[in-house]
Image 1: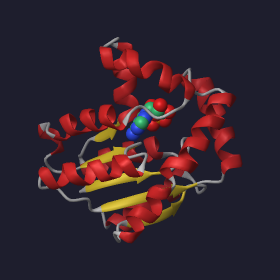
Image 2: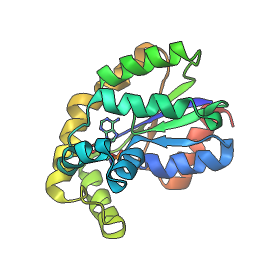
Image 3: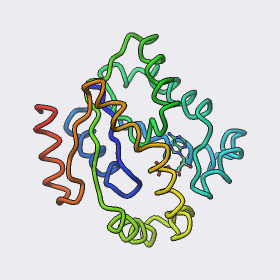
Image 4: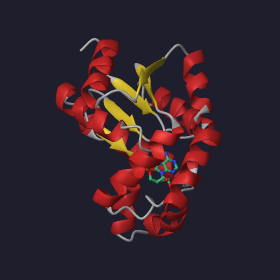
Length: 187
Ligand code: AMP
């Protein structure tokens, strides 16, 4: 099963991805986590990405697509994967499409978690008290939501036109969202 979880920051993609990892025994590929690991390891890529992430802007498509491509070649992705936080722009989606074609892989579903903006800021600020993430401040959240609306939201129609998009109400409880996703996937 090859999935994309689409949705704004704070929509619950990470939580739902974790539940799917357990249920389907396929890995969660979170570009945010991969980039944070590179920042922590102070690699060249991490150093370049750090300031962009602190502002809540998008790291370049080349960099992000490069790490995803390498990750997809690992053995544990052979039976499928859950992309969480990637792609985040039409440019990245186009590159992903070419990449999957080259690897003879095809997407099965794109699931969009929909949440009202007003709810998101509260959710992310609540997460900030637990995560200590530097980009969970009010100012950066506002920018991340703007970036989402401008660059990532168009992916819903992009994948809808391909017949892959399914929407789930992300305002429902974690259990209800998980149930809806299971129904869509038939698992
Ligand atoms: P996330 O944990 O998914 O919210 O990502 C945290 C930050 O990492 C984002 O605000 C971006 O700066 C960067 N990032 C994560 N995924 C991507 C992506 N697919 N493209 C560009 N930047 C990304």
